[in-house]
Length: 202
Length: 410
Picture 1 (cartoon, each protein chain N blue to C red):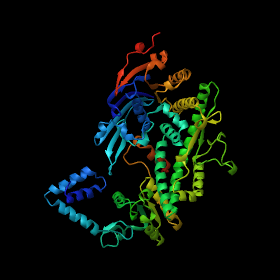
Picture 2 (picture 1 turned 90 degrees about the vertical axis):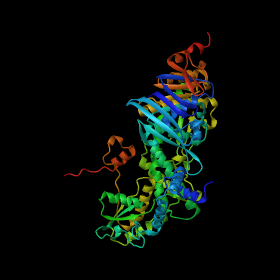
Picture 3 (picture 1 turned 90 degrees about the horizontal axis):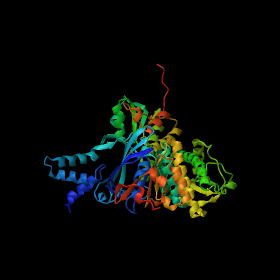
Picture 4 (picture 1 turned 45 degrees about the vertical axis):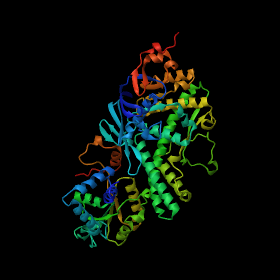
């Protein structure tokens, strides 16, 4: 019914997360009518995205194409003996925003999920083991998401890393800051109770 | 516990309904296909978020509304608990999926705040008794697991959450087993899912052991009274993974052997379960599916040592179901500290006059009971005097002027 170029665009937009058929059509028609070269600018940005972005060969965080290491791995001031393992590049940004971490990262690019056909060989696990085997790493902090797939991935990583004799830790689970205890969901409370800590004497 | 107010929008054949509910008994009278059972289903949905009438949940939405996209059905219940009055809203949203299909999504708001369903299931409690539920005793094992899950989720905090995690892990594990069966791969991955599966599985089994033991005690007492001392009713839990150490020679114990598993701790069950999974790994890898665990558990009902599912007469099964439902109601009171709302769908017509009286005498101790019937003639006059009568007609509910016209002359 629609001319092919328009239909192609709608179909492509629909494949984006969070975008359904209606939003896809609306966006496509907007781009068609729009007069300030937005379509051209967008097309150029999209093309440069793939061509201009690469992955750090050490930690697999994002870097500019052609560079071997990302800004974090290049930064000599960051502690090389400390690796924080996360699922996605966005998780790196979240932890960086906290300003509390001065070590390096390792991005797995996913979590174990047999239903989606994602196994250990589809994640950047082998390079992580290689990094640890090379030596100089004193602690690996596992920071996968606190859900079933994240837990399974953390368990798998700990099985693989333990024989290498590195110190393993996992992010604590607890209550969000600034919230009220009475509104916390029971699961979070249960975990927070299980992970309670000694009050340090001052 | 008592339902104070119910409002339904585009639910089944109710386009719009808002009702105050009286305490004690409510009797819904009406011809077939007017909406009596749908009314009970609505109340039951607020307790379990699950329908007892259909597996095709999109039919829950009124058929005219369901032509829209998205279509929305809405149930709002206000109820009195010991800790005060609450308002639970359940939204049924029928929407198009990424493919061509439609799917029904449920959203729940407790006192105006949106919550995950598994967290607030059982905040409002109801026990439902309908004639087709003899399937719990006579039907396949999945009927009994469903009964267990719906009942336990209402009274054991955490049960619904752990169950949904278990089901999710089971899907992941089965997908992995299938992949490993098709092509060799990282078997080490399986260890991870075994850990996750057994942690939740052992917890579910622990809860089922405790609950069934408590419920059996209650059901046996009720049943002995209902049968005037003639039958001893037993609820035999037959878990797919047996946590008790049995001598190999006795693996196929006679069904009636009572086994006491109540002393087992979650951690003990888990260790044994994990060990058993490891022992079965080769078989599971060949079959590509998880062979043991709570998803394959079974419960058998025995009267005087005879398995009612296989050998029970119609009358025996009906009486056993009655005992089970009364026990379920008492068990919930024991656990939650207050009566659930009792829902009886066309139950009296199936019972003889003695059992009718037994049942009505027992349910009158409840805080609130909602019954349906095609006419009021099966109910004894004293019961009718204590109850409110409503007529259900084409998706509307009208107060029914009292007894005079209902009672047979003389």
